[in-house]
Amino acid sequence: MPEIYFHVRWPDGVTQRCYSPSTVVEDYLMAGHEYELTDFVERSRTALGIAGERVKEKFGIYCTGAYDQLAQIERTAAAFAVVDGAKVTVESLVNANGSTR
Image (cartoon, rainbow, N blue to C red):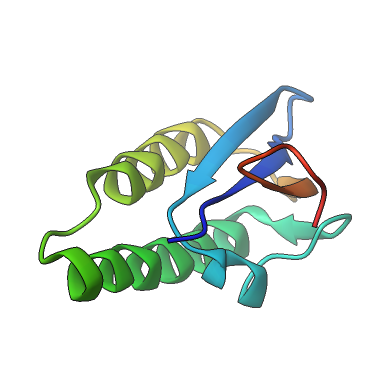
């Protein structure tokens, strides 16, 4: 499956490289766009859920990488839940070989 990484900048300026086992994330997140915190989490939840299901359909098991990534996103987002107007920026979408999408 074609995996993809999406680099995000959290409200405190910290950047994080996130993993998806499928390019479906491109249907939900766009490089250079800023998302309200809750919107970003929901988009990530949907995209990574679909990605995990695609792995399950192809290989017979759910992708723990997608599940773990979502859990990490949710934990990080929880820290900003009390910040009014918290936003997350998707800085880039990158192929596994490092090329920008």
